[in-house]
Structures are given as structure tokens and as C-alpha cells.
Amino acid sequence: MNTLIVDDITENRALLADILKPFSHCDVATNGQEAVEIFEAELVDGNPYDLVLLDIMMPIMDGQQALKQMRALEETYQIHDENRAAIIMVTAVDAMSEISEAFDMGGCTDYINKPITRGKLLVKLAELDLIPKEWWKHS
Image (cartoon, one colour):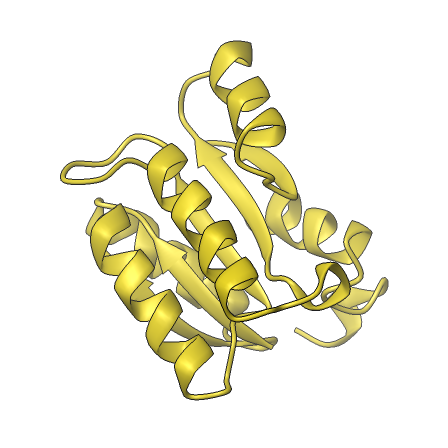
């Protein structure tokens, strides 16, 4: 699996990368603008991301804007729905308006609330068929 982790907090990026180490190659970005640039570069190289963990609240470009631009890039590069990246919004704020916008206007796949734990993240990825259902046997 090829994953892009987008969060402005160094510790959050490190935690997510550590959790995913047994399952995925991980790239990281510190804001939405950087994430969109990396996301497009991987599309151009023919190595699109399977998973993007995208923080909602970041400087320069927030996760909502980055999500919309990533989905637009997938359309531009003619990535069909079944091959689109699973984009999971990561939020510290339990704001249904933010989550609704991510689903309705951005096309996110799912969301997960902080604080993130190993179990919480891996159960979510197993539900989305991104990792084995019995993930604990592989990590």
C-alpha cells in the first residue's frame, strides 16, 4: 500500500507512519498545499496513493481544500472511482459540519477522530479492505 500522511504536527505524522509501517510505504506532508503537490506527482509517476490520511485543520491550505483538489486531480488524470485513493479525514474537532462538508462536497472516504490509536486506525483500514481483516496477525 502507498500512503500519504498529511498533518502539521510532527508527532502526529510520526505516530501514523509508525502504525502503518508493517502495511504501507508512507510519505508525509505538513500542509494541504504540499500534500496536493505530492499527490499529483505520484499520479504523474503512475504510482497513485491507495490511502491519504488528511488532517482537516492545517496552515497554508486546510484539509477540506486539499481534499477537493485531490479529487479534482483524480478526475483530470482519469482515475476511475474504483481506483481512487481512500481519503480519510483526521480531525481533532468533533464538528459534524466539517465532516458533512468532507463527505458531501469533497468526496472523502471516511473520517477518524483524534486522538488516534493503533487499534482505531487499523480497524478502520480493515473495514475499508485496505489491510487484512485479521491485521493483528500481520503487525
